Image 1 (tube, rainbow, N blue to C red):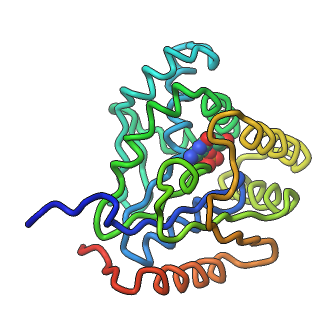
Image 2: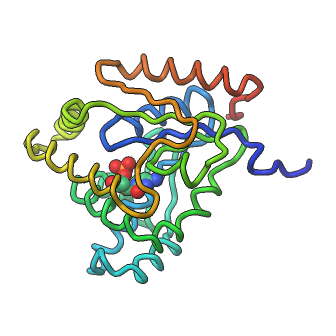
Length: 236
Ligand code: DC
């Protein structure tokens, strides 16, 4: 059978600020469609984590780009828990801390780090389709995606959701501090010179303030089936 050209593989991009629910929604949508999932934020988080554990400053662009290019990462979706491995270390929890998120936002502003991760992200585009979650999925990585969604919610709602998520994991942080950190991260992600956070051309803007997760997933899977009427789910 001839190889399918990458641009023939359907892609749904989901971009937006932190705490808008992208990760949860992207995971559920990929499951519903039976498609692959790219959690691009995890790659930036892994660069920050790896650099921190080797005591490399988060401004050392050339060294960080080398780390990004040679990340020995494995996403293990089969377990149903979405385990993330860096070498032989299970870093699933370690990359989810707020400190790692802030670190990711710092390293993500470095052009050489972003360049080093481009091809790795595009390699996720495989049949029967891909749901790609990030900040620049529609603007830089998959500008030809058939369905582009920019997911957002008010900063208060996003902080509340993140607070609940952390609390459920037994992590106690103040809502005010979270809200402040979130606003700072939004500013850094939106104002950086390379691949700033913004909707891609033709993106549908979806404000999820006041919407439940199932409502968002239902709406987006309807959009996906309208956009890709012939797409078939992945075989188990
Ligand atoms: O989505 P997240 O919280 O896991 O992302 C962590 C940081 O990584 C976020 O502050 C910005 C950065 N990021 C990025 O610049 N580009 C992406 N495609 C994904 C994440």
